[in-house]
Length: 256
Length: 256
Figure (cartoon, one colour):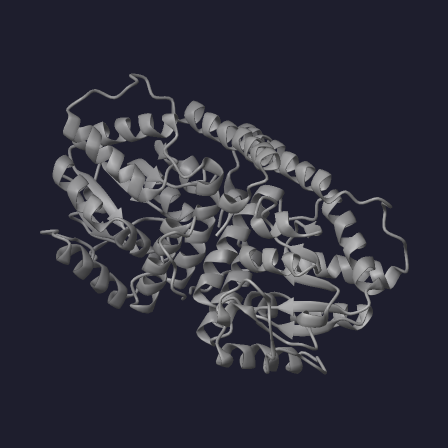
């Protein structure tokens, strides 16, 4: 890729992209993971590249739920390992969750590389290299999991997860917390708590909330109601974005 | 990537992705091109993966404009070469346009490979391998172009173009026709005619229109008015999509 000056209006987004491209070249991120990141970028752009108030509440409820779980597990794939390794480890520490590398495009080499990244970033234990259980309803490679991790978990956090797998985990009876920028994705729809936010922002908010020792901002969290509001917000924002750029004549911020 | 059964609800989209990943492995598509494709996918999903009525009119006006041009040029990059090589060649034939390979992430190797693909697909002449002119206002590699092509063109068709370059072409005084699924992108906003449609659908519609010998469905085409309508349509569709899935309980079609 090309050198990007820090003054570029899309500097942060472009640097994130560079990180993923490097991750792909090193065999950490799947090629399809780059395309998936692009889809996420489009939704983040529509959301306004910030945490919506409703997402913050979902993050607080999710953090509390993970902390109260009997056996919480955080599932990590290549994109997540590149985008937020330190946050994954810190959240695991604060909630007592186990970390399991679990890939849609599984190869043993990629699993090993992701485990290395997480251990370098400070993780003591990372499951996933020796899968000894299976998620029912998924093709062989996609269903592999660890009996000490996802298999025996009660609550699972799945950042950037594939829809088939999110549904399969739900069918297994797990309580599923997703992080996915598309509020209409199968993953967001399958989850019990659907966090619609960028993964590193979401994890940072969860960490900050747990450190604060506060209670979540809401008691009875209704996930479907909240998802509907997010969709509404994006739709309204889209029209607002158009109107705003129309009046300022400044489309500079709108893309790349 | 993984084997995909034709029965998969997202078969076509997944096969397109595979084509781009193969293109990247062969050095035709830039890594950033995969991410850009993902962004496009998200917008196509919001549009409903079909040509909106307003987009069809833009395509007709654009086809007619290219045909009436003194010196029309079609700019081709890696993604376009993978997604619609035959359509590019057929449209060039019908409008008398020259084809120029012009890359944002330019390397001579990639230019050569894209020229080969187009020639294999039947193109007689493809410009771009020997750039001898510069688009003003762009960094060296990004500004390279051909004096027989983009440099001397009056009308330029730019499918899947970067925003900086679309703006630079406009500043050069060219009449710019874009194909971009994001109606708010800098490319869509810089263009004189902004086609908001998937590239192969857009090109097929343009070809079909020219073959029909008909007149465009509208006389005074107002690009800004039309872009506003597309944004409105996406926003309405987003809320409709949510309501529909909410009522049918069938989120299967929504992602991947």
